[in-house]
Amino acid sequence: MGYDSTNISPLSTNISVINSGLNYLIIKLLSYIMLMEGIGYYKGKTNMTVTNLKEICEQAMEVGTKIDLSDCPYGETTGSCYFVKRPTNYYFFLAGLVRLQRLTHIVEIGTNYGGSIMSMSKGIYKDDIENSRLVTVDIIRKNNEGFKKYPHIKRIYGDSLKEDVARKIVGSFDKKIDLIYIDSVHEYNHTRENIYTYAAKLSPRYVVLDDIRQCDDMIRLWCELVEEFGNNAFDASDISIRKGAGFGVIRWR
Ligand SMILES: C[S@@+](CC[C@H](N)C(=O)[O-])C[C@H]1O[C@@H](n2cnc3c(N)ncnc32)[C@H](O)[C@@H]1O
Image 1 (cartoon, rainbow, N blue to C red):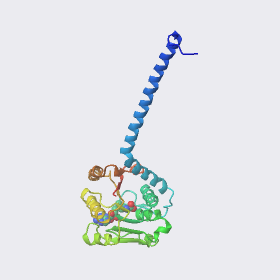
Image 2 (image 1 turned 180 degrees about the vertical axis):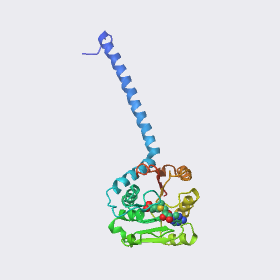
Image 3 (image 1 turned 90 degrees about the vertical axis):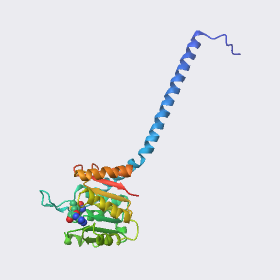
Image 4 (image 1 turned 90 degrees about the horizontal axis):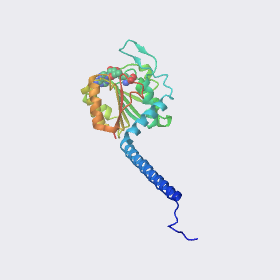
């Protein structure tokens, strides 16, 4: 039987109106979904680096909390508690970052009792210890007994901003390093000078700064670093459970 276009009932007219209405709605819905996906894609692209560094920090803390740091005490403090016998929260972050990113060549400015450099050492895989290079500097020398268990950690005594000391630290390495952890005097010029003296010469993958929220000086410095490094500077204070004093991570290269 052939198709007779003159024989269209009112019912079929209604159905075709409904069909074209539905088609219109479906097309609209599909375009909306595509638009949203497009926005999401570009948002994802622009935020990709920040998400990655944030993810690295989150994973670092997760990995770090599984590492036994019970023999890495913070030690003597200038605060109300004279001696802290346990590791502080950010030690787990540092140990986790070292383990997660397999960092082996590390400089620390500000040793104090040695808890933080010992924690970073605990993050190094056993097989990597022999080829690792850990250097820490301070103007004071504490906890000689505790350091006996870490013969691979090189301790340098002196002011990190003095030329001869900087030469000793930089001369301890023959290639680009993995991490510079800066935790000495929390003043703008002092911290900035440490960053640029050592990062320029040692080209680390990461620079980690303690106390980025501690005072106006450090807040100003951190803001400048965020401006300079954009998505490669991440405030990890919350993740490392250091909300008050602050903790910042920069992906230097
Ligand atoms: C906050 S403590 C370091 C704490 C240690 N990083 C930890 O987390 O266990 C700061 C240390 O920086 C040291 N320091 C201060 N000025 C320094 C300088 N110019 N060069 C090297 N170390 C310095 C202090 O003697 C002190 O031991």
